[in-house]
Image (cartoon, rainbow, N blue to C red):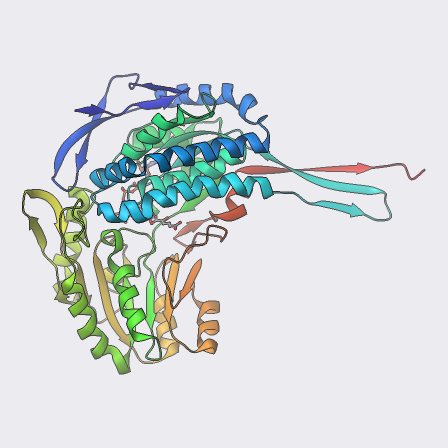
Length: 483
Ligand SMILES: NC(=O)C1=CN([C@@H]2O[C@H](COP(=O)(O)OP(=O)(O)OC[C@H]3O[C@@H](n4cnc5c(N)ncnc54)[C@H](O)[C@@H]3O)[C@@H](O)[C@H]2O)C=CC1
Ligand SMILES: O=C(O)/C=C/C=C(\O)C(=O)O
C-alpha cells in the first residue's frame, strides 16, 4: 500500500509521531493508501522551514517567481494523465472530468498567476501643493496557510497556492484528508523544479489536528480556506482575534431561475450540468431550481427525462456521467436528506436510491435525484446537501422568483435564464450572490473576483484580488524640498 508523505523543507517525510490515516478509493469503498495524521509538531516544522525560506523566495525577482510557477505548470502538464487518474481514484469523480476540467484548471491556475504577478502594480499619489508623494508597496505577508476541500482537490489547492507563491509568500498548505493524493503528486514534482526548499510545505492530516494547528500558529499571517460554512466559522473564531487576514470561500445553496423566454435547449442541457456535475459536489451547483409557472410542467417532464438518461458508473469508464460520492459519510449524509423528503411534503420525481455498480459493490454511488418541493423553507431548500440532489419549484412572477432566490442564508452564486435584458439587469443587481451567471453556468475567467456574500464567506479569490489578499500594502510618503 502506498504511503503519502508530508512535504516539508523540500523533503518528503513521514509524520513526526508516526500516526497514519486510511485513504479510501470511493469507487470501490476500499482503503488504498495511507496519509500522515500530522499534528502541531509537523506544522511547527513546516513553519520553521517556511521562515528560513522566506528571505530567499521573497527576494526572487518577479521573473524568477513567474518562471518557477510555469515550471510547476509544465510538470503537471507533462503528467496530466497520471494526475487525472490519481484525482479520479481518490475522489470518485469521472476520469473524463478530471482530464477535461480538474487538472487542466490546476495547470491554468499556476500559469495564470505566473503571468498575473508580472502585471501586479501599485499606485502613487502626488499631493500637489505640499511637495509630497505617496507610493504604496505590496509586500508579501511572510508565511500563509492554505486549507482546501475534497470536491475539486488539486483545482482548489492550486487556486490558493499559486497566488500565495506568486506574491512572494512561503506557504504551509493542507489538502483535504479525504483527497490527499494529487497534492502529494504536486509535492513530488515540485522537487524537480527551481522552487527553493521550504517555500511550499504540504502537511497532511485532519482538520482538527493539522488544520487547526495551521490556523492557530502565530507566525502564519493569513488563512485562505475553502470548505463548509461550519468549518469557516470555527476558523474565523480562532483567526480573527489573532488579526489574521482571512479569505473564506464557504457553502452555497444556489438558485437557478428559469424564465419562459429563455433559450430552452441550451438551458436544459446546462441545467443538467449545473445540477449534477461532479456528483453535485461543487459549491456553485444550482441546487434550487425555480421555474416560471407557464412552463413548469414542460420543464419538469423534459428535465426528469434527461436526468434518467444519466449513467452512474465506475469513474474510469468513459460512459459514466456520474461517478462515486467522495466518502461513505458523505453518501449517508446526502441519502438522509432524500429519505427525509416525504416528511417535508416533498416528492421524489426521479432517482433517490443508492446504486450498486458491478464489480464496485462497496462504492459510494447515488442516483441523480430530482425532488419537487412545496416550500422554499424546507430543509431540502435551506441546507447545503452538496450531492446529486436538486429541487424544483414553480414561481409566478419575477418578484417572487427574486424573493425565493434570496430567501436563504447562503449567497455564493445564482443563475438566470432569460432573454429579457431589462430583467437580466434588475435581477443581477438584486440577487444576493457574489456571482451571477446569465444564460450560462460555471463560465470562468480567472481574472474575475470569485466568492460569496452572507454565509457563503468573506473575501474574494481570483485575479488581482488574490494577489491583494496575499500582500500587505505599505504606504510611503515623501516630502521633498521645493528648491
Ligand atoms: N467549497 C465548498 O463549498 C465545500 C463545502 N463543503 C461542505 O461542507 C460539508 C462538510 O464537508 P467537510 O469535508 O467536513 O468539509 P470541511 O469544511 O470540514 O473541510 C474542508 C477543509 O477544512 C479542513 N478542516 C476541517 N476542520 C478544520 C479546522 N477546525 N481547522 C482548520 N481546517 C479544518 C479539512 O480538513 C479540509 O481540508 C460538506 O458536506 C459540504 O456541505 C465541503 C467541501 C467544499
Ligand atoms: O474557481 C472555480 O472555478 C470554482 C470554484 C469552486 C469551488 O470553490 C467549490 O466548489 O468549492
